[in-house]
Image (cartoon, rainbow, N blue to C red; front, side, top):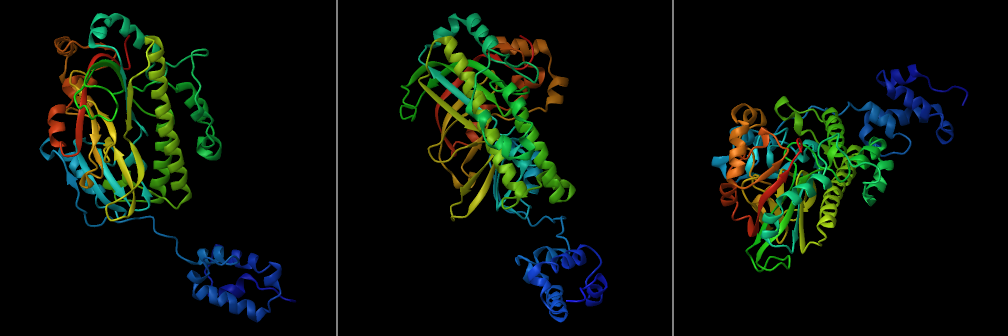
Length: 467
């Protein structure tokens, strides 16, 4: 062809100013399109301009067609609130209920439930369970991805603990590390295959996170995270753990994915907010679709963080068991702050977010802790559909951290611990037992969701701070 089409030719055809003109002209330079007559080229462009949607999957013209369409609106309106089940309503603060009501208005929401330990959080309340259609919400998973409970039961009697308080206190001091600065040094570290996972190289955001993960593995976070010795009492002979009814020494840990999980949560929450702009009250519930690159990246990173959190617990329990010279009779481990692909009763696949909620599918074992002066419970899930196969993840906060620091005194807390025979290493007023709800009331509110197999009563507790 002697003459090639120019920008003005496309403008006269009706092409808008912008990328579409440049993309179309560049495409016409491809050999098989260059052979077309001037008239045929114009006729083809006229078709694309008239029906760009018909060319979105065309190998030659998909980019031009996309440039002709208005950009998809990132502003998403809330819909009518769907119904959800609320457990222990009389014990749940209004702020948490309001957050759950907002979550139930998301267009991607399918179902939900609110646990009796619920309290206010970012986006989804702590204790919130949310099922969505083809969407994952980073802040509905939470910042501490894969935070979990892990319990080891040892064939040692309760007297062992009572007679060796100082010795077991030292075991916790030498085998556990808390917070961001206290990590295991060279020669003390234990390796783990999770640090060699492909995701660290395959996901661009994670390429500089492996070093921090390696430094912090086997350690616990701050806040409400702990490692504690206590007395396990197995009460149900059909407990699925193969442990006879009776009392034993137990080790219980609570922690998550450390800096790795926090950085993943922050990065992908920002990405979700950039691509999914919700009204102000719902902005922390921005999601990533599961068929998007960002959604797939987050899903892989979230699962890596969950496995990393599990590895941290395994190393904690491994170190303690080695010092004790014991192998546990049984272990129970469960996580919260996570999302799972599950099927509802009607067969639909959904993404179930459990932010501070324990998986309680039929036959699933878990641990629901109380406070440091109240028992925790070893449970087996009943798989109740209305709760989306979930239960509480603990007693839940009665006071905010700020309120606890303002209203509670150190002498008062020390007396309370002494009255219950609890030795505390570290910890702060914001984690005082009085800052938490009554675990017995919480368990009463969810008696239909789990069967209780036994209890764990803390006796020597280590948290961040002090030694």
